[in-house]
Image (cartoon, rainbow, N blue to C red; front, side):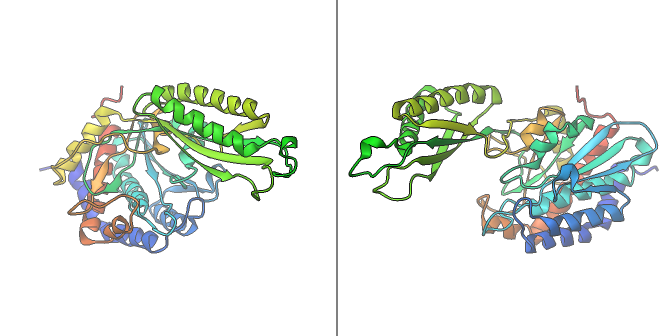
Amino acid sequence: MKKDMKDRLFELGHEIKEKLWEISDYIYENPELGNEEFKAVEKLTNFLEEHDFKVERAFLDIPTAFRATYESSKPGLTIGYLCEYDALPEIGHGCGHNMIGTMSAGAGVILSKVIEEVGGKIVVYGTPAEETNGAKVAFAEAGVFDELDAAMIAHPDSQTKRSGKSMALYPLQFTYKGKTAHAASCPHEGINALNSVIQLFNGIDALRQHVTPDVKMHGIITSGGVAANIVPDEAIAQFYFRAETKETLEDVLAKVKNIAEGAALMTGATLTMERYELPYDNLVTHENLSEAFCDNLRALGITEIGERESFGSSDIGNVSHITPTIHPMIGITECFVRAHSKELADATTTNLGHERLVIGTLALAYTGYDVLTRKVDLG
């Protein structure tokens, strides 16, 4: 009796499982902040090259980005796996990116062993700095993901959940310029830039009652003067603006910019507005691809799969506006553990974490196989 191809993928996954554990644990033990992930990149790219992937390092002139390809001799579809590997300050891999990068690279390697029989191409992308200035945005803007027929990434969490939504995000900095003066003897000769920032906050707070419940607006003052007896000639505020869709967000941003300009007019200050980090689009899950992944999880023994409500923001959203995309969650704990915590980071190295690392890798590989064999309607 001929062996099912997924049985072969299962065997391949278990042949390299100890290597996957070693890579994930190494990245856990060597946490690196965004755009500084040199050890993680070396570990992942060496692994991919050992399995005959062609690796382009410092991709798009981003030092810790890469693109690794494995192409069969037969025509077919192109599947993309996305690696993340940046850590959080002080917490380390509290978002489990050590597992994310390993699962995506592992899935690519496993699938490469059978791709000659089905045709097509595998691309594994190294996308640094998801927590801050996500490289997927730069990749998307450069047209990198246009080559794909589908893209996938899996994220560790307390519970296994199907791919859902994320919020669009736009980071905006407001810089007000005024004029210094002695705050006691001649305040009338000054222009108080800090007053502009205060009016900006007041205006945004007033806007909150006129936006939909999904809209989130939160900011800080990063510069507000140097001494209490000097009228501040410069004040800077940074905000994150979020909404369930980028269309809603664009409408909110137009209103916010009017408020910011009004704050400058009220005080006589001048205003400069600029994007200080890359913006994230909302995640649009491809439901057919998501259901295929869930079916593969069930085949691998994970039958309790929850629904995922909208969460924060991620640069995976930008990918989803270009090609069919999923971003499911893989449960790695027996009870609830907060994301972005040391407890979640530690859970990636447990026996259960290692077990789910292999299952997540296999589910990604199985789903990639379903795409390449056209068992998933991507229309």
